Image 1 (cartoon, rainbow, N blue to C red):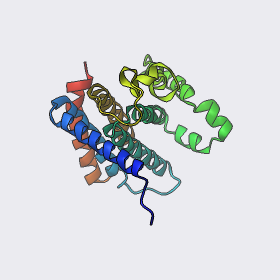
Image 2 (cartoon, rainbow, N blue to C red; image 1 turned 30 degrees about the horizontal axis):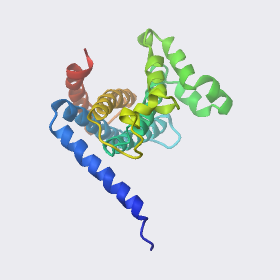
Image 3 (cartoon, rainbow, N blue to C red; image 1 turned 180 degrees about the vertical axis):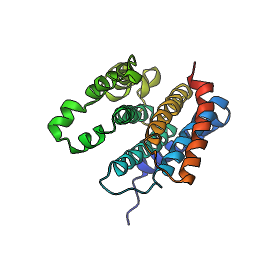
Image 4 (cartoon, rainbow, N blue to C red; image 1 turned 60 degrees about the vertical axis):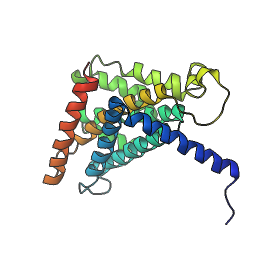
Length: 237
Protein backbone atom coordinates (compact mmCIF):
# COMPACT_ATOMS: atom_id res chain seq x y z
CA UNK A 1 0.00 0.00 0.00
CA UNK A 2 1.38 3.37 -1.01
CA UNK A 3 2.11 5.87 1.73
CA UNK A 4 0.02 9.04 1.89
CA UNK A 5 1.67 12.14 0.41
CA UNK A 6 4.06 13.98 2.70
CA UNK A 7 1.98 17.16 2.56
CA UNK A 8 -1.08 15.35 3.88
CA UNK A 9 0.90 13.86 6.76
CA UNK A 10 2.31 17.28 7.57
CA UNK A 11 -1.19 18.78 7.46
CA UNK A 12 -2.45 16.15 9.89
CA UNK A 13 0.45 16.78 12.23
CA UNK A 14 -0.36 20.49 12.22
CA UNK A 15 -4.03 19.73 12.94
CA UNK A 16 -2.99 17.63 15.91
CA UNK A 17 -0.70 20.41 17.13
CA UNK A 18 -3.61 22.87 16.97
CA UNK A 19 -5.73 20.36 18.88
CA UNK A 20 -3.13 20.16 21.66
CA UNK A 21 -3.12 23.95 21.93
CA UNK A 22 -6.92 24.04 22.01
CA UNK A 23 -7.24 21.38 24.70
CA UNK A 24 -4.61 23.13 26.78
CA UNK A 25 -6.58 26.38 26.54
CA UNK A 26 -9.77 24.57 27.56
CA UNK A 27 -8.10 22.89 30.54
CA UNK A 28 -6.84 26.24 31.80
CA UNK A 29 -10.23 27.98 31.53
CA UNK A 30 -13.26 27.11 33.69
CA UNK A 31 -15.82 28.44 31.24
CA UNK A 32 -14.32 26.62 28.26
CA UNK A 33 -14.18 23.43 30.30
CA UNK A 34 -17.85 23.85 31.20
CA UNK A 35 -18.83 24.42 27.57
CA UNK A 36 -16.92 21.32 26.48
CA UNK A 37 -18.57 19.32 29.27
CA UNK A 38 -21.98 20.54 28.07
CA UNK A 39 -21.17 19.32 24.56
CA UNK A 40 -20.00 15.98 25.95
CA UNK A 41 -23.15 15.60 28.06
CA UNK A 42 -25.36 16.35 25.05
CA UNK A 43 -23.57 13.77 22.91
CA UNK A 44 -23.70 11.25 25.73
CA UNK A 45 -27.44 11.75 26.24
CA UNK A 46 -28.08 11.32 22.53
CA UNK A 47 -26.58 7.83 22.72
CA UNK A 48 -29.04 7.04 25.54
CA UNK A 49 -31.99 7.98 23.32
CA UNK A 50 -30.84 5.41 20.79
CA UNK A 51 -31.33 2.69 23.40
CA UNK A 52 -35.11 3.13 23.24
CA UNK A 53 -36.71 0.33 21.22
CA UNK A 54 -38.45 1.45 18.03
CA UNK A 55 -39.87 0.01 14.85
CA UNK A 56 -38.19 1.05 11.58
CA UNK A 57 -40.44 3.49 9.77
CA UNK A 58 -42.24 4.63 12.91
CA UNK A 59 -42.21 8.23 14.09
CA UNK A 60 -40.06 7.23 17.07
CA UNK A 61 -37.52 5.57 14.80
CA UNK A 62 -37.53 8.72 12.64
CA UNK A 63 -36.70 10.79 15.71
CA UNK A 64 -33.79 8.45 16.41
CA UNK A 65 -32.48 9.22 12.94
CA UNK A 66 -32.55 12.88 13.97
CA UNK A 67 -30.60 11.85 17.07
CA UNK A 68 -27.93 10.21 14.93
CA UNK A 69 -27.68 13.26 12.68
CA UNK A 70 -27.33 15.59 15.66
CA UNK A 71 -24.69 13.37 17.27
CA UNK A 72 -22.67 13.25 14.06
CA UNK A 73 -23.02 17.01 13.64
CA UNK A 74 -21.83 17.71 17.19
CA UNK A 75 -18.91 15.29 17.00
CA UNK A 76 -17.84 16.64 13.61
CA UNK A 77 -18.08 20.28 14.71
CA UNK A 78 -15.95 19.50 17.74
CA UNK A 79 -13.38 17.69 15.61
CA UNK A 80 -13.18 20.56 13.13
CA UNK A 81 -13.04 23.23 15.81
CA UNK A 82 -10.31 21.58 17.84
CA UNK A 83 -8.36 21.01 14.62
CA UNK A 84 -8.46 24.73 13.80
CA UNK A 85 -11.09 24.80 11.04
CA UNK A 86 -13.41 27.35 12.64
CA UNK A 87 -15.32 28.48 9.57
CA UNK A 88 -16.31 24.97 8.55
CA UNK A 89 -17.13 24.15 12.18
CA UNK A 90 -19.57 27.07 12.42
CA UNK A 91 -20.96 26.21 9.01
CA UNK A 92 -21.75 22.69 10.15
CA UNK A 93 -23.11 23.84 13.50
CA UNK A 94 -25.81 25.72 11.57
CA UNK A 95 -27.25 22.28 10.83
CA UNK A 96 -28.24 22.01 14.50
CA UNK A 97 -30.33 25.20 14.13
CA UNK A 98 -32.29 23.74 11.23
CA UNK A 99 -32.68 20.47 13.10
CA UNK A 100 -33.94 21.96 16.36
CA UNK A 101 -36.41 24.21 14.54
CA UNK A 102 -37.91 21.22 12.81
CA UNK A 103 -37.94 19.17 16.02
CA UNK A 104 -39.61 22.05 17.89
CA UNK A 105 -42.27 22.06 15.19
CA UNK A 106 -42.76 18.33 15.79
CA UNK A 107 -43.06 19.02 19.51
CA UNK A 108 -45.74 21.64 18.88
CA UNK A 109 -47.71 19.28 16.64
CA UNK A 110 -46.52 15.64 16.59
CA UNK A 111 -48.72 14.88 13.57
CA UNK A 112 -46.30 16.94 11.48
CA UNK A 113 -43.70 14.16 11.79
CA UNK A 114 -45.66 11.89 9.46
CA UNK A 115 -46.43 14.82 7.13
CA UNK A 116 -42.73 15.62 6.87
CA UNK A 117 -41.82 11.98 6.24
CA UNK A 118 -44.38 11.64 3.44
CA UNK A 119 -43.67 14.97 1.78
CA UNK A 120 -42.34 14.91 -1.78
CA UNK A 121 -39.61 17.27 -2.95
CA UNK A 122 -42.10 19.97 -3.90
CA UNK A 123 -43.78 19.96 -0.49
CA UNK A 124 -40.45 19.76 1.33
CA UNK A 125 -39.25 22.89 -0.46
CA UNK A 126 -42.54 24.69 0.12
CA UNK A 127 -43.50 23.66 3.66
CA UNK A 128 -40.29 22.52 5.31
CA UNK A 129 -37.51 24.78 4.07
CA UNK A 130 -35.77 26.62 6.94
CA UNK A 131 -37.76 29.85 6.51
CA UNK A 132 -41.09 28.03 6.22
CA UNK A 133 -40.38 26.05 9.39
CA UNK A 134 -39.56 29.24 11.30
CA UNK A 135 -42.77 30.84 10.04
CA UNK A 136 -44.79 27.79 11.11
CA UNK A 137 -43.17 27.87 14.55
CA UNK A 138 -44.12 31.51 15.05
CA UNK A 139 -47.79 30.54 14.80
CA UNK A 140 -47.57 28.58 18.06
CA UNK A 141 -47.90 30.64 21.27
CA UNK A 142 -44.90 28.96 22.95
CA UNK A 143 -42.62 30.07 20.11
CA UNK A 144 -44.16 33.44 19.27
CA UNK A 145 -41.78 36.37 19.37
CA UNK A 146 -38.63 34.31 18.95
CA UNK A 147 -36.40 35.76 16.24
CA UNK A 148 -34.82 32.51 15.10
CA UNK A 149 -34.22 33.92 11.65
CA UNK A 150 -31.72 36.44 13.00
CA UNK A 151 -29.54 33.70 14.48
CA UNK A 152 -29.77 31.60 11.34
CA UNK A 153 -28.79 34.62 9.24
CA UNK A 154 -25.78 35.24 11.48
CA UNK A 155 -24.46 31.72 10.91
CA UNK A 156 -25.25 31.93 7.20
CA UNK A 157 -23.55 35.27 6.68
CA UNK A 158 -20.39 34.50 8.63
CA UNK A 159 -19.87 30.79 7.99
CA UNK A 160 -22.12 29.17 5.38
CA UNK A 161 -22.46 31.75 2.61
CA UNK A 162 -19.63 33.20 0.59
CA UNK A 163 -19.30 36.67 2.12
CA UNK A 164 -16.33 38.95 2.69
CA UNK A 165 -17.05 39.26 6.42
CA UNK A 166 -16.95 35.49 6.67
CA UNK A 167 -13.27 35.43 5.75
CA UNK A 168 -12.37 36.48 9.30
CA UNK A 169 -13.02 32.85 10.26
CA UNK A 170 -10.40 31.54 7.83
CA UNK A 171 -7.84 34.36 7.78
CA UNK A 172 -7.54 36.27 11.06
CA UNK A 173 -5.95 39.67 10.41
CA UNK A 174 -6.35 39.01 6.68
CA UNK A 175 -3.49 36.51 6.82
CA UNK A 176 -3.17 34.61 3.53
CA UNK A 177 -2.04 31.42 5.29
CA UNK A 178 -4.15 28.39 4.31
CA UNK A 179 -5.12 25.52 6.57
CA UNK A 180 -5.91 25.19 10.26
CA UNK A 181 -4.76 27.60 12.97
CA UNK A 182 -5.30 28.15 16.69
CA UNK A 183 -7.24 31.22 17.74
CA UNK A 184 -8.47 31.37 21.32
CA UNK A 185 -11.28 33.86 20.64
CA UNK A 186 -12.74 31.75 17.85
CA UNK A 187 -12.43 28.58 19.91
CA UNK A 188 -14.28 30.27 22.76
CA UNK A 189 -17.03 31.52 20.47
CA UNK A 190 -17.44 28.07 18.93
CA UNK A 191 -17.62 26.22 22.25
CA UNK A 192 -20.08 28.78 23.63
CA UNK A 193 -22.33 28.29 20.62
CA UNK A 194 -21.92 24.53 20.72
CA UNK A 195 -22.85 24.39 24.39
CA UNK A 196 -25.97 26.46 23.77
CA UNK A 197 -27.23 24.95 20.53
CA UNK A 198 -26.28 21.31 21.08
CA UNK A 199 -28.00 21.44 24.47
CA UNK A 200 -31.12 23.01 22.97
CA UNK A 201 -31.39 20.45 20.20
CA UNK A 202 -30.65 17.53 22.52
CA UNK A 203 -33.27 18.44 25.12
CA UNK A 204 -35.81 19.13 22.37
CA UNK A 205 -35.29 15.63 21.01
CA UNK A 206 -35.25 14.09 24.48
CA UNK A 207 -38.69 15.46 25.31
CA UNK A 208 -40.09 13.59 22.31
CA UNK A 209 -39.14 10.26 23.92
CA UNK A 210 -41.96 10.18 26.44
CA UNK A 211 -42.38 6.43 26.73
CA UNK A 212 -39.02 5.19 27.99
CA UNK A 213 -37.90 2.53 30.43
CA UNK A 214 -36.43 3.33 33.85
CA UNK A 215 -32.72 3.52 32.88
CA UNK A 216 -33.51 6.01 30.10
CA UNK A 217 -35.76 8.06 32.40
CA UNK A 218 -33.02 8.20 35.03
CA UNK A 219 -30.51 9.27 32.39
CA UNK A 220 -32.90 11.99 31.22
CA UNK A 221 -33.35 13.25 34.78
CA UNK A 222 -29.58 13.39 35.29
CA UNK A 223 -29.08 15.22 32.00
CA UNK A 224 -31.79 17.75 32.79
CA UNK A 225 -30.26 18.41 36.20
CA UNK A 226 -26.83 19.09 34.71
CA UNK A 227 -28.33 21.15 31.90
CA UNK A 228 -30.27 23.32 34.37
CA UNK A 229 -27.03 24.15 36.18
CA UNK A 230 -25.28 24.99 32.91
CA UNK A 231 -28.25 27.08 31.79
CA UNK A 232 -28.29 29.08 35.02
CA UNK A 233 -24.56 29.73 34.80
CA UNK A 234 -24.12 30.60 31.13
CA UNK A 235 -27.37 30.98 29.20
CA UNK A 236 -29.92 32.62 31.48
CA UNK A 237 -28.45 36.10 31.44
